[in-house]
Length: 501
Ligand code: CLF
Ligand code: SF4
Image 1: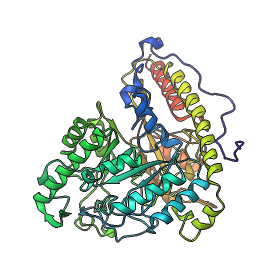
Image 2: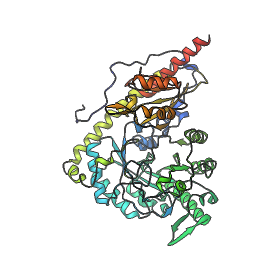
Image 3: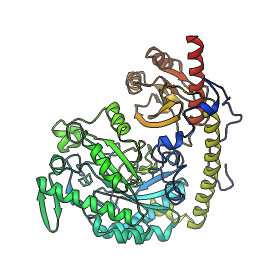
Image 4: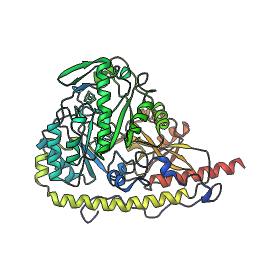
């Protein structure tokens, strides 16, 4: 425990990463500038970015893949109205087990939202950012959103403010966004061609009038581009979210990427369409499919160049609370936030967050040194390996196979270990017993991975994974993810060379 009573992850007792030379001296390795190659933030470390940008993304779990191992976000559902209709959205649908944008269990007033932020901050010192991301559009009825930000800023000034919008009303509010100190804005941009837009948006409401078809999409497109340019000019960091809809905009998203990159967007997050008839959305009811993980990765790879690509998005609910990939929203309801907030001393909570951040700084420096040391052991090779990792956070391999509800997927090469996505799975361990029926689905979800790194795994799943050609690796339990994967890769390459000789 830390002096402030926080539960902090334990450092490993002894480093297991052992330098190993494969294929030549370190000076000959191709991974010397891997951080820059991997993308400075959305997909890797923030090294190489200008200092003022690094400061903005350093503890934002969405804008920095590295930060998402350590910091939590919460959304406050204060924006129920929307000014457009997307064919993938049905905000009437509300299921606590559902995880997708536009869905909430409880809508909040700005006053309740500010109390909830204090309550969450009291229980989750990892909290670094509060966002308004619906359940409608944050700027369709902007006063609620801005009043909420005002109250949070006064109550917890060290917490970042974040906003997500479809962009239609954005140009009217850039000045206010800037004045409030909202440093991060997400615009969902699915097209730059109105003919394609007409297949995604049946209507918009703009300038006191409902617009339909291509004309509606044209207005939306123009407002999105204008809003993006205005935010960039105001020095606000912009992330663009795009929903990948096979057969509609999948080929077009490369053009969207070019368009937003040329206008100064910082990060592009291409997300898969979530489509299920049970959700009652147009796309769900008409059988529109979402992309496969391989299709998504191929598109993300093709767009990765000078622009950062986000690959760790979890498509959060509009009232999500906690680390990305977990949702602790059910712990904080309008019935108990008053009580939690009342017993909270805002100043000591701010101190607790500061103590947690100092701890994370030390961890990140140690992790970075371990990664560099491991990289120095890998020689030049054109080989790559896709592997899966069970983690509870903190950048460590610290979860039992049976407790994982998702696996993080990394691509390892001589350039390093790059986070490329996550695969959701059904829980194998159900408390007192193992759910063997879940195993085939888990094995299927890990398709393409040659190894899975876990803190521990039982005999049965190990046997099934081995039969499917997936190696199970427990050797690096509780070690840092990236350094461990690189070390394992170096050893695999060495074994490969020995076998080939
Ligand atoms: Fe929320 Fe969005 Fe801010 Fe993050 S989410 S408003 S930028 S604090 Fe993050 Fe969630 Fe993906 Fe959004 S994982 S859905 S990208
Ligand atoms: Fe739903 Fe958001 Fe689209 Fe509005 S902008 S229809 S809330 S997904």
